[in-house]
Length: 399
Image 1 (cartoon, rainbow, N blue to C red):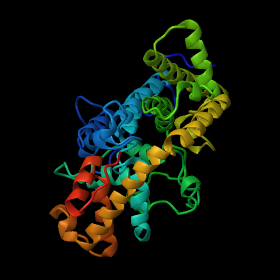
Image 2 (image 1 turned 90 degrees about the vertical axis):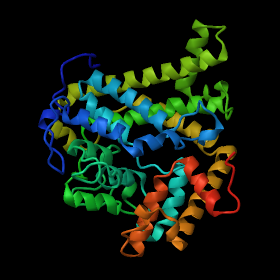
Image 3 (image 1 turned 90 degrees about the horizontal axis):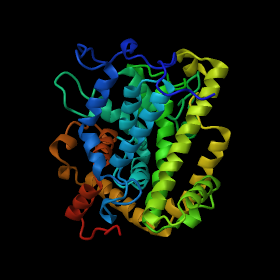
Image 4 (image 1 turned 30 degrees about the vertical axis):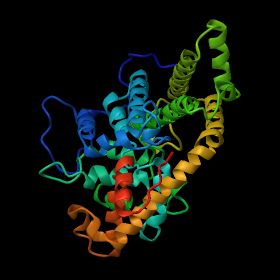
């Protein structure tokens, strides 16, 4: 059973009028609901602007048409709003979560995160999800009355938990945090404002997580083809993509290559979105859940069908060796990791080279290391390279 588009609000949708509110009390806006206000605050933040010059897969100077963290974020937002609209969810909350989901990423994408995590190993490590929470609750300094953006509980909860619960009911770390524990930044904030780390996230956060998966799959295929890391015939070996390619070739047998690729990408996005809508419709018809029941459930309500889960895994299984672990990409990212490691080591030895606002107020070694980590995490790719060239005799070209 598919859910019809344009239908009434789902009973499990977040209600902006019933929000659990903000940490710091503020007068309501006369023109915007709380979730719309969250979107606007994120868009106007410095951290959001910096996404324009942070790596998705390819470093910014490799080409103007590759995705950056910002363009990826906007694509996630578009998909999240489409899903939320079709499922009767709150589009503004889904947008806020899409806008915020990558705010905590370092320069040079996951390579920078790996390097910063190693550098901070003795000081709690680094996690981009925890860093996003720190940015919106502390590090953004824009408002007279509070630090951070003072977002609603629903946006903060969805930001932290969009990939699922972080702990079990007893507080023991689960899933990705089972081995090393939940980052201290999340635990510390959770003592101030309980985000219910053991429950499933709300439906809008589940939508944002799937929108991220869909955007990654489709647009990384597009970027990989543009970079000549593989061909359309190569990726057509993945069943769902092969089906789409054959359908296009039958309908348009003489289509030029550029349009052919675009048709593949847009049809893949459409098919994945429609699958989520249909599968969620089946689950809703079966369980008829309330918002509270969604959070108490053993697994997500918003999901791919079993067949699409296999297709998603097959796409990622193709992209990991052919793109993310391609020799060319790994070489550049290896150099990028060295840039981040060098910068961290330099600021530890020469804290006077930090800007005044970043070097002040660190009471001990742990606090100083975290401040250095915060400073480097906020850098764009090009600023990290500029800083490296300022402090070191040679800097990798990352090409």
